[in-house]
Image (cartoon, rainbow, N blue to C red; front, side, top):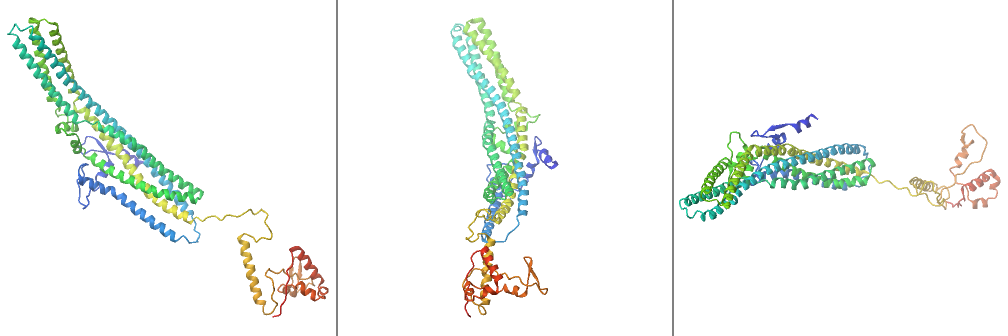
Length: 565
């Protein structure tokens, strides 16, 4: 477990030293980036660069090329096996079964690594989504505060100044010395309010350039489909391994053939996944090693490069990007407050209208709200808040997510190689499994004694008996009469004679002499011959008595006719 722990826990600082990246990022970032002419290409992550995409496409095509070679190999293999299908040689399959069982367990372990990698990648993507969502909420809070300041300057103070202008013209028309002063103050306050609106719009535009609403939404949409689809693919591969185990344990030809078919389909799936994971691993590693060029192009639509660098680098000694705008709005607001107090003092002497007093009171409260909002904007616009979420996003992206993708890459490639061996061995196994011969009927079942036997031994015995009879008829055709029948002759049992001590041969508890032994070589006479020689039964009474008993026991005796040669 030490290599695995080292792989999962080892991190190195990024090139700028702001966040940590996995060792996987360094390994994949060092993969050569070559174009179609084998010229080196800049490894900085840039999906808008055609040369970079070309180099990435060449790396992705390597597993696809290996898949094509594997399928061509299996095509040649099955063609050769089809030509060798007539081989009757029986081969032992014990070694193949042991190899299938062992490599199936190893393949299942590789698939389990893919499950773990998918889980780790999903957890990393969830953390990235959460961090980017928090960062988005922070920026959205700043935008809302800026919009409130803009609304107070535009619709709050300006509208009240217009109302004061209409109200003060009538009561003060007789006092011409006061009217120009009030009119000048009103114009100055409107000018300050308009400038405040412009500054608020500028801050809002800068915040809009960092609009990251698409990041968590895009991650959510991708993970909504990627997570279950990847789990289903690895589950399908694991199910194929179970089919192979069942086929090996049951010695099932059908299950092994099913695994061979599904295994070829799984090879395509594994190497396609390997291509995708390889491309994501290399591109993700390039992004983790140097993300700033891509982020500057992505978020610098308004040309505020300094503003983007402020949040990406976040140097403590750096100046707040909104400090100038906030300071200008604060001075404008102070001027509005001073002029509002002065106008209120003048009107308190020359005009005591209730509507005028209400307008001055409303402007004063809105100025106070603007001061509070500017303080909040200044506090929340510090780079520490946004930059911290940026660091968290990069840590989860370059650690858990990238390592999970790397584990799935290793799992899919190893599973593809192991499935190649399994399909090859399984195909060799089911091709050499012979079908068992089915026994017709039951051995204890009663059969017709007059029908020929159906077993292979009886067939071979009948063929051997016929061959012996043909040889006997051929050898005896020149010296003895030819028989007119084909069935085998009943052996001639000799009569019991005097026992001699010269060549005794015990048969069934008695001995026979040499003449009796040779009598087995001559066929017995037919009934026609016995009828033509009436004296024959008197010479051998015991012999005919024994013949009668034998014929009664074994069935009808066949008639033999002699013909002189």
